[in-house]
Length: 256
Image (cartoon, rainbow, N blue to C red):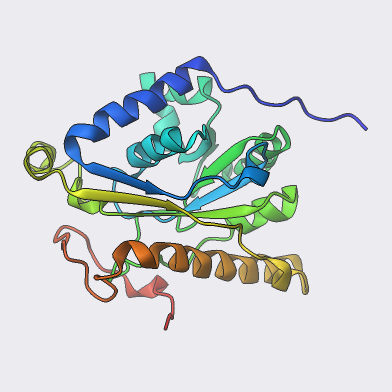
């Protein structure tokens, strides 16, 4: 049977991962724990990350470089429409997600194709910066679960915390003030790769839709577990309050 070619990471993307570490250094103290388990290093793998700040992608890039990973990001179509950034995203092999359009369905087969090329694909299952009042992961969209169904790729949770102390939800509004504060304080920003992929064996019965919903709950629960050690002293209320962030209770998930 014919197999897909293995994706080769473009030099530009490798260089941008290095640049991300340079950008993060003066703004935050980056602490990365865990990494990609050895058995997953040859791919494919889905990295499922929580989303708390506009600064998240830069921090994830820096953390992935430190961990020796060069994932392909699933990103909103607006990024791809930007004149220069869009061409860079396409050249680096990232995957476009046109939310709320007729083309949104194209993202899943494109992600499955990337996974067939043994890529690591990074996705934010929440589909937006989370608006949970306590800043825990919201109820997820089913995209990551459906990607796992289509490809058979394992899902590894990646938790991050502290990026909201660098750039708040409202960025780029008041961007200069936020960056100056970060330069002066260099808040601690943490990224933790889970020790093992999410066990999705409990989501193998029922209709495909029911399976995707069940798998999504398992992924978000595992993301909670991965995040908890990073905010051990902030389990209920974050120490840094992002006053620009609106609250949305409609997607709050029940948790212990």
